[in-house]
Image (tube, rainbow, N blue to C red; front, top):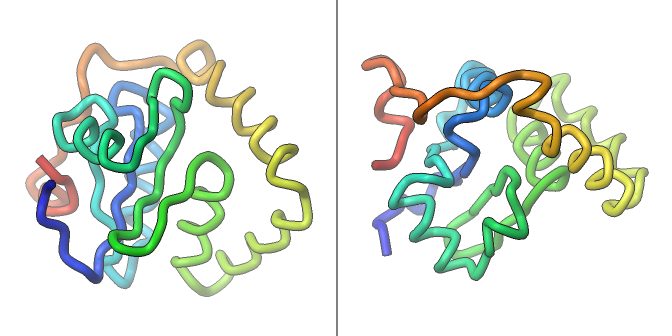
Length: 138
C-alpha cells in the first residue's frame, strides 16, 4: 500500500475527463489548508487504492474521497465533503444534504454519464505543472 501522510485526504478522479480535470484545478485553488492529494483512477496508485478499498471502478466510475484510516465517500457525498473542507462560504454546501443521497447521486450519475459528451476528454491523463506536481500521487 502506498504511504500516505495521515493529515492528507486523497481524491481519485477520472484523469482523462475534462470536467474532472477542471474540478481538480478548482479544488487545488480552494484547498487553502493543503489537505488534498490527487490520483487518477487510471493510474497505478488509483488502481491500488480502489482495490484496497474494494471499489469496482467498472461499477462506480465516480469521484472518490479517501481519508486514510477513517473512511471513504463517493459521488455526491464525496463532492460535498470536499467543499465543506474548504471552509467559508463553501460550508453552505451542507444545505444540499437535505436531499436524500439517492436523489443527489441520481443527478451526479446523469452528469457523470454525459461528461465526455458535454465536456470532452483527453487522450491521456493531465500532466500537472511543476507548481502543483506535489499534489499528485504517482
